Amino acid sequence: MNKKYTRGSFKLMKSMNRSIILNMIREQGPLSRADIAKYTRLTPPTVSNIVKELIEAEFVIETTQGASKGGRKPTLLEINADHFYIIGIDVGRYKMNLVVTNLFGQLKDSAELEIKENPTSEEIINTLQQGIHQTIECGNLPPDKFIGIGIGMHGIVDTTNGISLFAPSFGLHNIPIKEKLEKEFNMIVKVENDARTMTLGESWFGNGNEADNLVGVNVGHGIGAGVMINGRLFHGENSLAGEIGHVTIDLSGPKCTCGNYGCLQALAGGPAIAERAAKELKLGKSSLIRELVDDQLERVDGAIVYEAAKQGDVFSIELLHQTGRYLGVGLTNLIHTLNPKKIIIGGGVSKAGQFLMKGIEETIMSRGLTDQGRETLIVPSKLGEQASAIGACVLILEEFFSQK
Ligand SMILES: [Zn+2]
Image (tube, rainbow, N blue to C red):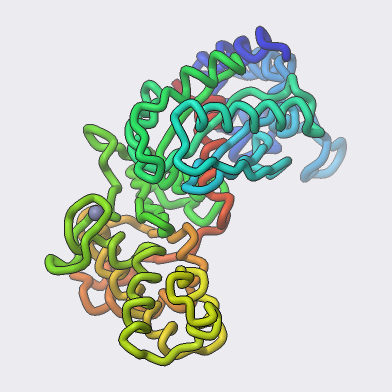
């Protein structure tokens, strides 16, 4: 791998003007040098010099494609999207979802990495390292074009040091992801909470564009939110911001994995849906679910409830409707706390969106304080199951296109 070159690439970006021009080409390109000078108010020679450097560094290429106002087609500039690649990994409960994107967030490769049961910190690091080595060395993309690795990790993350402070699904603390991966691969590594990377991914390449105040809610085994305020992810003082899975919805509700009672996650997360279904079925409720699990109620999970609902099972449809109402209370709390323009729903449970949405919307309509609050846009994730992993790539893109 050409390590020196990668390091140099980031050094070059420290210049403010270079970064402004690069971002302008990314957001509005293809553009001519004259357009850039006009929009940035930099002098044409300054623009020419910087563009020359960007072309030499192969960040930008010239193209003659594009609109012509008669006469000779102007030479336009665009991002050299396929000259660099980024690895993004979403570390879930049972598996890691790995993707490779180019500078435009377009998917170039993907893989699933299995996680051992009850893994140690070393095993998590090993799985990450093996998956990354495999992708770089055995994939069909040139190894020297990879410039960084982004990780979306469930739980609480120290983003400054790239440490997973607490990963509840593994019961692990203080996994030094950034340190270990940077040592192994000698490229930039960034680590962030998975709900936040999902929000970042949707903001750059999904349904969140044009919303500077945005919340992405990841509804899966657990429930977490990525809060974006004025275009920047908000972490709070100790990275706890957005832990809406542990907002209390019902004081006398079921016990949550965190020890409290009636948390949103204990009412609307995947396992909570399965538990409520199994409990009612044990009491004798009739449902298609019985058939789907051969009367083995311990096999009921969120996916089976969804499957039964799709087949028209009234019990399952009502159960998901109720789940939507719980989510609606959680989202109303978010609306009243943060007043976002948009809320994006992703994660495994969101696959059942068609059955959840009614309950969500009814609840927000009946509880929202103002017309505008009640009309807050609630939309599904566009990037779906890849959202957190693609968002992990954006951690590196942010750095690459950084205006610092
Ligand atoms: Zn809780």
